[in-house]
Length: 316
Image (cartoon, rainbow, N blue to C red; front, side, top):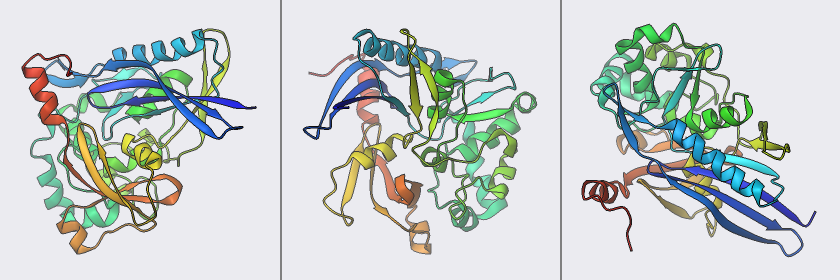
């Protein structure tokens, strides 16, 4: 086969896009083409800042159908999104509660509780992840304390990329690189940490064991009837960006910019020293057993807010 066609669904905190990658094995060239671009924005629902995941799913499907309608045979589909946010499902696979955004203020005051009750160094020793007040560990604690009536209905908790893959395939998966952003994955076992998860009040049964990138989740059936594999890529958007970065060598650093900017390097070993803790360095999961040792710094969020408040729809 000379040509392979893969579709990448890339969802950020402010926009999404469906991209078509065409690889020519004879000439060893890769070309990218934007198929569909769309806005991702918060909405207020019952007092919470939430994501319009129904609209996002609609746009994902629209982009995929555009490719299929061109007569292109897609070899695989991969989805990446921003980290930490999740969707709750019941036993029938129906949504429970709201897809609350990490930008919602429900986690105010939650992280300090964890630092007292578990200990900052203990959390870092277990997870290796930076302390941000909206990490999934604090979101779940807020959920179980503020909305305990919902927890009895929950059977599964899927992070955002896993949710959209589920909607396309009907199969559930918990991809490792994105799972590490929750601050709930044990850095030594690559599985959910019992102590940290118990503190949230969430049940371990809500989660399957995190899987490393590369496994086929299931198939999406296109309008023409073809079954197209949906692959668990490095589904945290920064993890995929780092894989694609043309780093000169193993000592190179990267800067990935979007709503957030993330600066760091890849390492075979995590950095969980006292100095790393003091600097709030994070060790997020990467591909092929590597860690993404990095810092979160301000990205385009301020610009995005100015555009929204001034009602500017586009920049020249």
